[in-house]
Length: 371
Ligand code: ACO
Image (tube, rainbow, N blue to C red; front, side):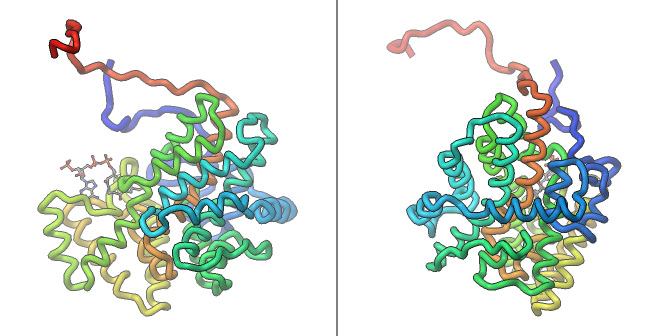
């Protein structure tokens, strides 16, 4: 048996959801650069689940399906109020709340195609409602009900802030959602596929995926990027801070990638958004500091920024609380998780690899009293 640490380079499945080939990311063959510039997040979800872009009528129906499913069972919202809201991380809350959603869905364990589609719509539509309700509850405010007349992106910001976002914020947030929607066999997507390949249900797959996304080596990096920027404080302190961290072999959050060695194609879009939004909001310092860090890490380590690096200053300039950054990643990536879960169900086989044993052999049993 041979092993590859972290399964690097191992091709574990076939998939037609998204691809990373020669550093180019596509969703079902559509280049991420085109989708980032032109697509609404709703069109991208439709593409990932249906393997085609919707026509006008299909898009209208799909948006209606999503917005009609956005209200979360009251019991799930009530339960959020019982959590120690000041101490609980929103990703831990989300993992628990999504698991709770299954308890209020009579179809949770149904496996037929129609039931799975209904669950997909509910999960996609309800994550924003849960996250924004939790954010408001811990700020001492009442949750805001979803607004059916708003786009997916605008509705999230509306439920978070209690007022409709301006066009620039809506556009930026939509683009961020498009850029995070899917990414081939990343750690959380693989987790979701492993989970449902046992023929467990979609809620279990998404709950497991949220747990995987939470970690700082994956989706949890975006919040930690902002923590680092805040810790540095001023642009002129960035160089010394980063050089010292690199000398101590500390990992700089938001840099490096298992697959991309010549740059993450999503990062340039987020960098430009960060430039624009920080300029509009007069918070250029975070963009300038990010660029400075980018230059240092690239020249010192040859590592390039990944999707999480510039998304931190983007979300910060949209006025979003820092610990909501990773839940926002989940709001987008749940579309990809679902696409992969549906694909796994279509042609399922249990995922059960082997481990090369490295422990001792031939151990003689020792009775308890003799140990
Ligand atoms: N800062 C400093 N050094 C780094 C970084 C970093 N961000 N990333 C990798 N390195 C170094 C490693 O220390 C290692 O050096 P060594 O060979 O001297 O030991 C070398 O580069 C190779 O790194 P690995 O950790 O082996 O790379 P791997 O492919 O296993 O990990 C990962 C990729 C997890 C993304 C890594 O680059 C990392 O930890 N980055 C920071 C966290 C982060 O930004 N995560 C988000 C990734 S994107 C996403 O999931 C949405």
